[in-house]
Image (cartoon, rainbow, N blue to C red; front, side, top):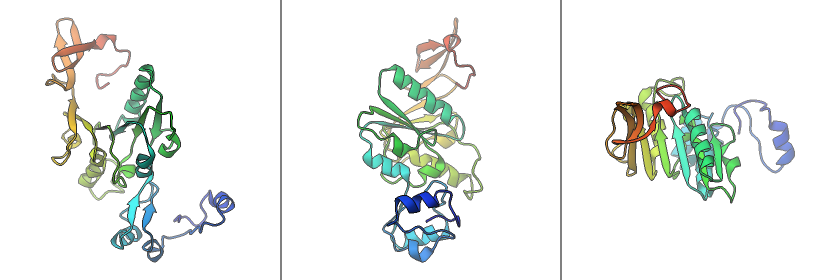
Length: 240
């Protein structure tokens, strides 16, 4: 089903899948309510009346990330945030490559998640949008992070709380949650059972990450353990 009268891929869908019914135009609530499962594109709002009616009738609403999670056979690093998620996703992907891992990277960035699935992948690194996270159910990342939350997509969400809650769904079932202690909106809720690490600009407690001032300059540090001198980092910008 596509809400557009003539979707750009309609001809190829009809040619490749002649046995499949293609419905176009406004969503038919009665038709959708007969489904057991609805797989939504991230661009389709689960709050639409037709989707709410289907859910009320017992249909499960899920998306590509939930389908991906059912098939993935390697650890998953999941990254979201209003800003910098593409930068951080790319950095984690490059670091994993440098560590010698066969790593696949995509999701909301570059290659769609379902196209990443392969038997030889040793690590998946996914950038996830709030839209994609709205329809996760059993998705459980090995490491999940919310980098930051700022006002965005408020044409889709009724308020900041709803937008923030969509972002925080990334922590559902996660084994480890990494959050920004300088941004309270990124902190996992009390119901999150994951092990936790934080990052921030200031000094950090044991097991957390921050910046440590020493006589020879500022260092990236884990707790009180200095790891890398900031002056030796090629990546510019204190936020990096």
